[in-house]
Length: 334
Image (cartoon, rainbow, N blue to C red; front, side, top):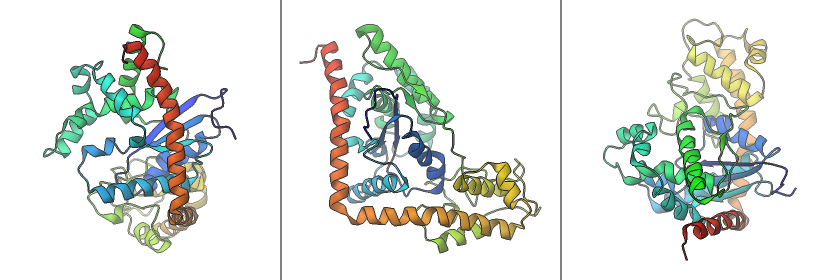
């Protein structure tokens, strides 16, 4: 299949290499990435430059980038049908981010809710990167003349800045950038922590590994974690706000089985909590086991993976360089 089909619009999305990919990432984002390949020209990025706002060990960070690349391939993103690359291997991201810094107002960045939240979490490291993070994100998106960005409501504010910057630049210099729109994912339940089901499943969950199902977990580990998942004392299987733990298990079951909550309730709604957890564990283990195998196979063939990483970075750079030639010409840069 030819990747750059002119009849299709362009999608851009990225993920940070900040931890092991978990079930929430998979059902909330990655399965959608796979489906989008059927209808769009997709560009998917491992946004390692964004992750530098938090200090990390260099060798460990490189390993995380490679592991995330392998996992994205393992879940079904095809680097021949999409462009899958690592952000720092395309220098045009940083160049355009600096240019956009000169077109972004301090007040715009100061209003970003994620900056306020991250500053509270990292009071010992409130660096300029946290403040200008949305500018680099705008550069990521606009560099590829993106039409749609598949994001949740929590990222809408950042996308609005991307739209504002595109329109601001275009108003002065002519039509250089596409103005991207949000693409609300068709699929993607918000999977919650197994131990604190009021909170979303997160790599930074402080309640321990038992709260998170990683895509690399063994079937035994999956069963153990789901068996210990928080429910309630009602013993009634229902999907409702007053039953967050049970609702989360139903969301997980419906997500991996690719069915509606109504269908999930018809299949397992009459179960005891023990049987419910067993059914969810069976479904999750069956879904993740082949992914883990593909992931291990991809990582094992280091030469093939490195070749894929370099060739896809070259494809991304070709698109990015064409945009930057336009930008430099408009700005009068030699």
